[in-house]
Image (cartoon, rainbow, N blue to C red; front, side):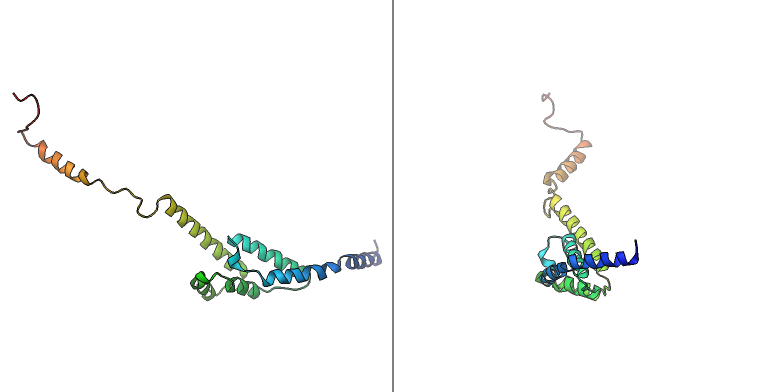
Length: 155
């Protein structure tokens, strides 16, 4: 193949698929604008959506920085998790992947705590038997005694 042939093929591909950018980019921007961490059930689902959107935007020539991804994630936490959001901000993450790793670990720990709690909820342990201690005391005190009443036929 000659260089001219490659150039002609490249131009043909550009003409054929260049319109995709005009169709994909507005939809990717819309998805980026409306992406919220609180709308996902798990960190993995959010991470997948984040990477899909950023990949589409990169395909169209727009780049999303690590800072943008960090800010998008931290600023869209649910209102009940403000304290967690502040703690993650103060942790000083510089890479989105570091934040996601930390979020995944926290999610796994929370799931483990919930499973442990569900298997043995607070207050579900049986109460110690009240009479068990008094039975042991009575049995020990009567062993040394030679006068036993009520045993035998009464002879």
